[in-house]
Amino acid sequence: MTLLLIPFLFTLLTFFFVRVRVANICVPKLSLQHKIMLRMTLPLLIILVLSLCCSCTSRSQSDNPVDARQTTIAFGSCAHEYEPVPAFRAIVDSNPDIFVWLGDMVYGDTHDMSVLKKKYDQLKNKPEYQKLINAMPVIGVWDDHDYGINDGGKNYSKKDESKQLALEFLDVPDTDPRFGYDGLYSSYDMISNEKLIKIILLDTRYFRDTLDPDNETGNKYLPNKSGDILGEEQWKWLEKELTDSADLYIIGSGIQFVAKDHGYEKWANFPAAIARMIELINQANSKPLLFISGDRHIAEVSQMDVTGLSYPLFDFTSSGLTHTWKRYYNEPNKYRVGKLIVKKNFGLIKIEWEGNNAKVNFEVRGINGEVYLKVSHKY
Image (cartoon, one colour):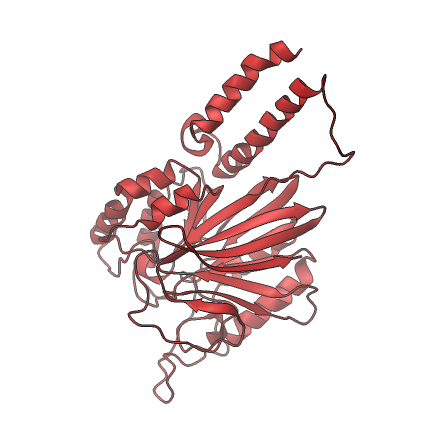
């Protein structure tokens, strides 16, 4: 039996370790969700075959062995298309299961779609980006600059044309549901150790109401107390996504959800929207949920307690693949855990399962892979 399995095992090992990625080469007719699941399942299949090969000579030391496989999610935001992006190489070297764009993939800032396309092409043709998209699945959503206008909202006149270019840049197949509805929001399922991780990417631009400038204080905008960010259709969709049977939810938002003390774009500029989100999280599901965000040209981890939740609500911000603030400023954030990072960075989320409980490690990494910040939480 063992000898019969060796050729099959050799084929699987060759396929996996030469890094021919399922998501980009081998099964182009599958959806991205299925490709991600297949890629994550392949190592487990190899382990199963190895176990069968060794079963005639050894037995497990435990009746209930723990599968120590770790799920790693990389994410980042804010890349000048005209600059080198060494962070892409560092991301590949960290060997994540997926990379998530959280906006400002390029700095379009235009109503001319030919200009925006050229900028997308400029970034996509970089050797370091080609290496990244050939090494792992890449998903994403926009923020303001790749949407087309700085701090833009629902009144941007080219948002539908811009959406087509974003989908093209992300290599989204024309069968994807996003071609059939307004906005760029989407979700993706990942299976790890028989646990379902759901990544939800919110569109905080297409439907977002207007913000008026604040000429009285040091803040950039006045709060829009009755305004909305997501739009009713996206809210209904999100409610359905959160009542799914996932074991861990990760919500990606271009703008920060938890941090409130700074005067720039944030969910807190829309008090009704942030209250609705917290109510929805409370009502929808008891499973752990966390946010990831970009936009700010810094990196930090924010944590707040929410009435009704049995766990703290985290927002892991990673922003600045090619640029950050010109000088360090200790911006206030009463919810910050650890230090503020004002260096070029990307984020890593490492998830390990201990029974039904997830241990999540948040790591801020530099463009050469160095660890600037690490925060851990066990749910």
